[in-house]
Each structure stands twice: as structure tokens, then as C-alpha cells.
View 1: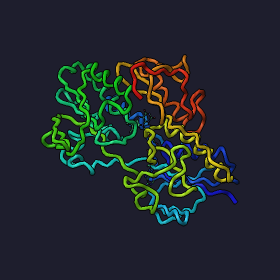
View 2: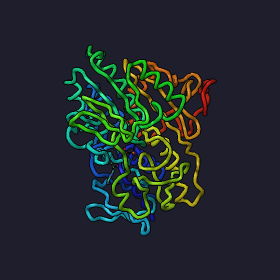
View 3: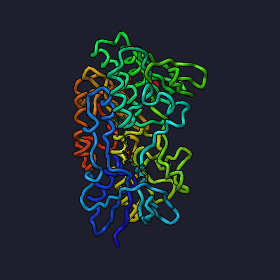
Length: 416
Ligand SMILES: Cc1cc2nc3c(=O)[nH]c(=O)nc-3n(C[C@H](O)[C@H](O)[C@H](O)COP(=O)(O)OP(=O)(O)OC[C@H]3O[C@@H](n4cnc5c(N)ncnc54)[C@H](O)[C@@H]3O)c2cc1C
């Protein structure tokens, strides 16, 4: 009898997993079903460019179903809950999907309602997010009419998807207002709950220098308690206030709502605990997790999802044939950081090694932690690779799930 594999979510992780599995198993060996609530696959790195008029919303959206290989069943319906004890997924149309292996790939949910005032007065007028397609498009309209004042970019809490995206937004805002000839009339502030510009010391110092160079004011350890859209101020739990004319806020993130309705599956934020090297969930041996939906200490990024996919698909194959799992996922993450003026930085790191300077993937590759036009081109070209290599489940030559060390160097003054 064919194995029944059910994949929840048809975003980055669900799509690449389904396509890789379809290649690994014949149709007679495995039935693959993918469930998602809508049919709109957004290339999320493109959301950064929408507010600045560098990409149109329609250029970063494709039908989910069309990204799936032949022989994969697609169900467009919300998920009600998972019953781990009976190996069943209950869908919102009342259907029940029994499974032998379940893959959770339902990403994160934005929770603006969890911060006082954020979704209240001024939301989508004076207070925006670019983390959704609607938000990014609405912010584009507002930025085009903004002719001076205080812009604050704020991360409410970690973890967030693509932790460098808010920094990229600051760099692009600096570039955008310069292009419009009004940079001297705009004050840009970046308010973060972290104790620096980024999480790891070497990259944090490099990114703080870049913010400084571009005249972006950095406010650290700012824990947003309230967003007052009427008065135009962020209020921190420690009483500090940051006034604004326009706020770009990254709301609190949580896992999908159905996770909370599924006994034993998730944690208090509805993320799914899993083994950080095999991607097998703590909930049951036949449940695997990929991408933003997990509680792993890896970045919530498409690159991470891609690297996890290679190991996880191999582990599903091993699980179904009774072999021991491959514990080789090392937390590898790789991100281009757009810095404006047609330049970008590149960072590459894993659970153990922080982002370091040097070259990627070898000593003659792209510059790491250094602005270059080549990295900017890499960021632009990546959209093509996303639709044509990453989602179809093809390997990208020279880029593997194991983080390469050759080409990297540790600055003499760095602390680890
Ligand atoms: C502004 C921005 C910029 C980014 N830039 C980069 C970048 O430069 N590089 C990078 O590597 N990453 C970047 N990312 C992050 C990257 O897009 C995500 O990490 C990646 O898409 C995660 O894939 P995923 O499969 O876990 O989740 P997703 O791709 O978000 O897919 C989750 C899917 O689950 C579905 N779903 C959820 N709940 C339910 C339900 N109850 N019923 C049915 N379906 C459900 C959703 O509809 C969705 O399709 C960026 C993200 C943002 C927001």
C-alpha cells in the first residue's frame, strides 16, 4: 500500500518538500497531499521592495497549485486541527485526512492585535507593516505622499521572519528619500528589542556602523508596550517614548492557530518543537516540521527552509524504511542584506558559527559582510532561483545544507 504523506502549508517549505518527495517516491509508493488555505503564493523577500515602488505586488504572487509537480494532490481549505493520537488531520470543510507521515509547514501568523493600540487608530494610515502583501502595498502609497517627518521602524519582539528585513527597510528608506531629494527632512529611527542592531556580535557591529553611516538612529532594548497611532508615539514597557509621523512595525509572530487546537503539537506561541538536527517533531516520530512553523533556534528564513528541506526529505524516506535518521542539519542560514544604492551585504551562518567576514561559498565567491554590487545582483537573481530551482526542489549548484567554512575568517577582536 502507498504511504500517505500529508503536508500542511503550500508556502516555501510545503511546496519544496512536496516536490522533493514526489521525486523521491513513485506515485505507487506514496500519495502526497498538500493543504493550504488560499491559492496565492507570495515571494516574501519581494515584500521589501514593494513600498519603494521597486516591485509591483502582482509581480511577486503566483498560484500555489501551479508550483506543485504532477501527481501531488492540492486541497485548498483551512486546517481545523491535527489529532496526533489517531494520525488524522481535520479540515475546515469537515473532511478528515489520515496520514502515515505529516509535515507541518504552516509558517507564522502576524499578531498585531497582541500589542496595545497597534491594530487600532492609525493602522494602515500612519502605522503600517510591510510583512503582508496588503500592508506593503498600502505603505507604498503612504511613502509616496510622505514629504518629511519622523519615520520609525520597530520590531515588537523576536522571533520574526527574516530578522534582517527591518534593517534593509531602514537602508532602503535612506536611499529612497535621498533619491527624492528630501533626506534632510526625514529622521529615521530603528527601534529593536535586541541589545544591538542584530543578534550576533560581528554582524551586529557591522550593521550598526552601516546604520550610523546612513544617519539612521538606533534605539536598542526597546520593548514596545503600546503603539499610539493618534498621538504618534511608541511607548516602551520601561516608559521610554519614541515619537513618529509614520511607523513601520513588525508585529509579534506566532505559529498557526490550528496548532493551538491540536493536542500535544505546539508550544505556548503555537510553534512546533522539533529536533534541531533531524527536524522530527517532539510530538510524534511520524510528524516532521520545516520552516518558520518550528521553534528551532535557526533564523526564520527561506534559505533555512530550503536547507532544512534537503535533510527532512531524506529523513522522511529513512523513517518510512525503518532506518535511523540523518542528524546533519546544522542551522545553516544565508541572507542577502539590501543596503540601497544598488548594493547588498551577504551573511552566512549556522547554530555554532556567527556571520563572519570572508567569501561565500569558497575563498573566491561573493563577499561576506561587505557591501557590493555583486551581492545586490545576487539578491535580485534570487527571485528567479526561488520559482525555478528552490520551489521545484532542485539543488542549487555549490550551495548545500552544510554551512561552508572555507572562505570565512574571524576578525582578531571578535568574541564568540
Ligand atoms: C518582508 C520579508 C522579507 C523576507 N526576506 C527574506 C530573504 O531575503 N531571504 C530569506 O531567506 N527569507 C526571507 N523571508 C522569510 C521567508 O519568506 C520565510 O522564512 C519562508 O517563506 C518560510 O517558509 P514557510 O514554508 O515556513 O512559511 P510560508 O512560506 O509563509 O508558508 C506557510 C503556509 O501555510 C499556510 N497556512 C497557515 N495556516 C494555515 C491554516 N490554518 N490552514 C491552511 N493553510 C495554512 C499559509 O497560507 C502559507 O501558505 C522574508 C520574509 C518577509 C516577510
